[in-house]
Length: 174
Image 1: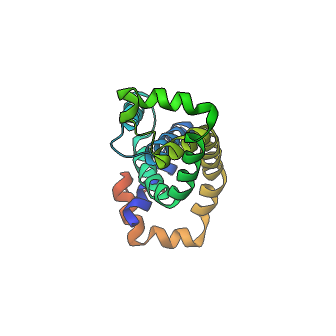
Image 2: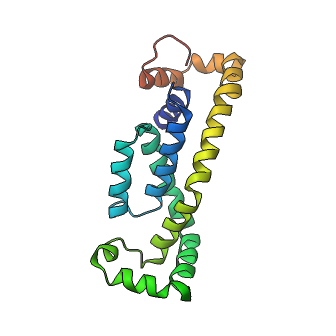
């Protein structure tokens, strides 16, 4: 738990552009809300490796969003059921299911369809929100936190030692 938190802090405190971290979180949401071994996840992983983004943020975010998907599964099932039973889309779903490549995607599963639709709908808002939050964190919170008495105590703790080991910083401020 401490190591994961230290890795998250390393990503947030790094010199990486906040847009790269935000994009990684958005792709992690898409991957986390879908079954792990789906063809869509392979395409997302290929994009993650081709586009310049923070791989650590993607992996941490994917674990977080996979756990969140477990909690949101009833919502995803309702969204998927609404989409799959919508009369105007019936022909599209029938055509997709009759094609082998689309059948492999498992979009006929209500939870998969709902998770995919939810992730697509919130991809850009998550990117914009995480980008803004990371910038605000670095601009205001990080500067203030470094000056607090609590941070001085943390810097002397085992947690900070783990953080230094993970981040590669030795003896300097994060």
